Amino acid sequence: MKIETIAIHAGNNIDEASRAVIQPITLSTTFERGPEGDYPGGFIYTRAGNPNRQSLEQVLFRLEGGADACAFSSGNAAGGCVFQALEPGSHIIAPEDMYHGLRNQINEVFRGIHEVTYVDMMDLEKVERSILPNTKLIWLETPSNPLLKITDIKAIVSIAKRNNIIVACDNTFATPLFQRPLELGCDIVMHSTTKYLGGHSDVLGGALITKEQNAFWTRIRSIHELSGAVPSPFDCFLIVRGIKTFPYRMRGHAENALKIARYLEDHPSVEKVFYPGLESHPQHEIAKTQMQGWGGMLSFLVKGGVTEALQAINKVTIFTQATSLGGVESLIEHRASIEGPQTKTPQNLLRVSVGLENVEDLLKDLDQALSL
Ligand code: PLP
Image: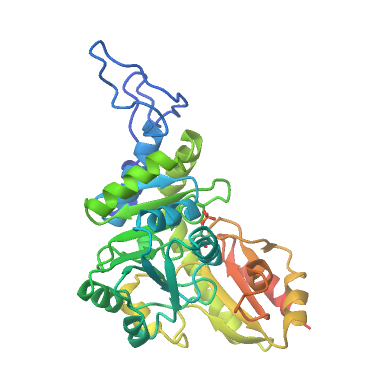
């Protein structure tokens, strides 16, 4: 089946009793046992498994071409489960521009438990030189947040495999429509399903998808159930519903984003645009080899500095000034201020999550916001 068909059918089970075409939400936390003490319905207790979560997990691993998936209550919970699954004392190599929420999690929650080295993932030699005898995980995020840097996934996988290291890739920005990390050799894909998969900025969620069933995945499944960071049945229902339209939404996001990126590139008030679909993007050639589309995220530097950037962001009327991404509405944000004082993000950088409004309206809004 092709991705559009998987998105619609793989997470929806017609209810046997009522024949409801759309799977109902099963709120029950517990499930009746049979006369032998067995579980004829296949479920015991909702933290361990629930029909809506099972449907969500099914569609997720089918979309990424994996063997299994775990759905979590947030993207950070999903990422955290991978770090928890490592033996204490493990060394992690992660991108220097890793999503700041996960970076803070490693630094604070796993302080004293794991070691971490942040590296520029474009510098393959540096990645290789950072490997220690206890390196167990290379974490990738491509395109990265907020500079849209592209990591050469196959090259990193080949370094990792020579050294027996697990590779996990945060595929939130690209989505399985535009990038297939498991096919490029990664072991695990992570998503914040809060973003494009949910797609409507109304539900928080996360996911891990494995290429194959193995000991590391068994440990992840066990932590998932025991630590209990699972999404509610209603959250699962909303994400399954969002996924049904995600391939078409993604194409719309990407089409609008490319037009906006090209427009901004020629704008006199803009110093630089970061979008992997632009020929000027430093890793555009790598992006072409591993992405089938460029996604809906871009960022740009406003000429001048922080004052000019904040002036522009305060003038938009259709874009909403807010953090997050992947919803149908366009968002714009001054990234450095959300990332906090240690941020390396330039102070004049604005990050845009391009929505599905008519692109002419979006361009007009940016035009008036950037006019002096
Ligand atoms: N990964 C990326 C690339 C993100 O942008 C985010 C959230 O913004 C996350 C992970 C964390 O996801 P969540 O907010 O669902 O915990």
